[in-house]
Length: 147
Image (cartoon, rainbow, N blue to C red; front, side):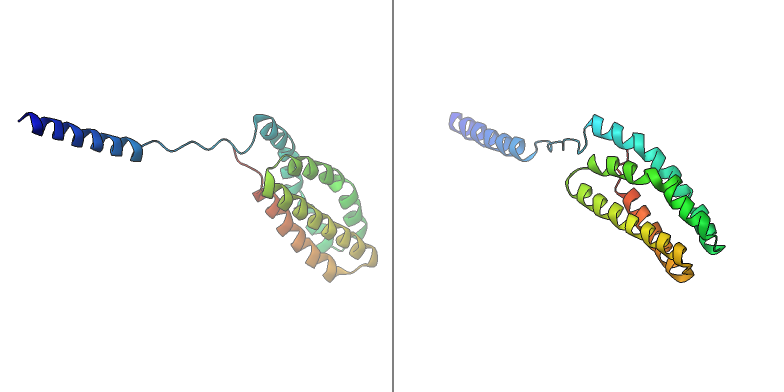
């Protein structure tokens, strides 16, 4: 009987070791962004969102072929957008930072093309680049971390 107790104790010890080694909690991922980075991103995100909401004004200027106001809008209200997008993209992590920088660069290429189209009075080029600018703007906003 004593022999069975020692065998049973050994089996129970082995079962406990297996349960403990297989049932450990998963390691929590460290946050991808520091609180300072999130604070900077949130600070400039508000400005970026306001300008995204105002993109409808640019569309109306293009539709109305109001080329003077197209150029004025790009150089006026959208003038600080490059700075704000730069601050946001520099505070993103790794791959998101590279993607955000490239997307912002593409966005400004579209703005420059719209401005050139306004100078030339080229409606179709302005409309096409406006649509691409909206896509790039939304792609940039999708890269901003939530919370």
